[in-house]
Length: 380
Ligand SMILES: *[C@@H]1O[C@H](CO)[C@@H](O)[C@H](O)[C@H]1NC(C)=O
Ligand SMILES: *[C@@H]1O[C@H](CO)[C@@H](O)[C@H](O)[C@H]1NC(C)=O
Ligand SMILES: *[C@@H]1O[C@H](CO)[C@@H](O)[C@H](O)[C@H]1NC(C)=O
Picture 1 (cartoon, rainbow, N blue to C red):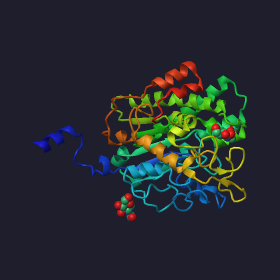
Picture 2: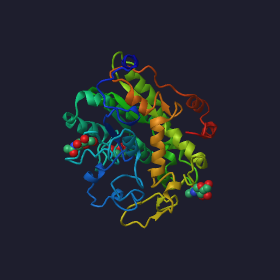
Picture 3: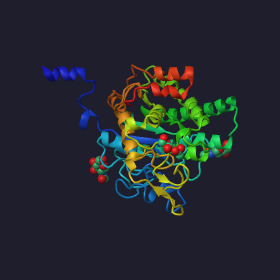
Picture 4: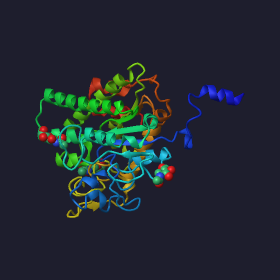
């Protein structure tokens, strides 16, 4: 009797082998820039000793390993939650075991333009296409696709167009998000159906940006503004994919922007003692040159008290927190569902809930003051 009930309740009870916590053994694919790069950049660098392969990168784990952190990065933790042994390998590492997925993200990647010694998102998607016979269609459809990209586009735009008008900014944001939409639609046409998209960080609060724009203890607001304009377009864009009848496009959005803002404004609540400068580097915000062989950079004593390890990447402790948010936070942070829910949601079905602007972002739009973030519940 019990067995009969179980069979009728669960959608597809026979095929999967369930890993820990009831999550099926599917693959993880990451696309984007250095935040999700587990070592691809090393294969594209002419520099024989790129910084991320040098001490003190990786120091909290073992040795430098090509990741931009003192240890693990978000995809390592997500892989762990998905019971993927030893994380996912870089796609550019030939002969690696890709049975549980691959990392296509490369440091310095952008959506537009031609990034040096890196790949655009569409080049990453083409690389995936070239390897697609590694996985079955059914497996790809059930697997998780994580994307974080755009930082490089906006840092570059801000540098090359420091006095861009509001109209020029809007036009640039539209061209970036339109291209992102095209790249996602290509992945979807290749059989991907579960997307976890991370919104851009408040780019003006990165230590390297504060240092270069000499903003002291403040964030550089023009870059935060670009990131917000970009972020506002992501949820509606993904809704559009997901609302196509019988399309089976599923997604969730991580509000990384506000997760960072909360941690920089109420750092002690999250047990970070320094959020306005980096642990490793040199300069006013200790933000430049970590791992460079010819730069005498400083290293903080206790990495876990820093939110940023280098000028633009989080410490391992912060990465772990962010991965936990992706996997299990409430709808203030993950909309419309957590990554765990996205993985277990039956493939081919349309979502029943969609992304919608939450109360905080509505309030933000009305008043546009950064003080508003102080109102948020501090727990996420
Ligand atoms: C590849 O990894 C999977 C587990 O992730 C393992 O079951 C399989 O045996 C490995 N294949 C090879 C050729 O090592
Ligand atoms: C940076 O901007 C310049 C000028 O618009 C452009 O030519 C270049 O391709 C951009 N680089 C990247 C990586 O987007
Ligand atoms: C960072 O914040 C601390 C404490 O609020 C402050 O003393 C310090 O000057 C700030 N650092 C920079 C580079 O603005």
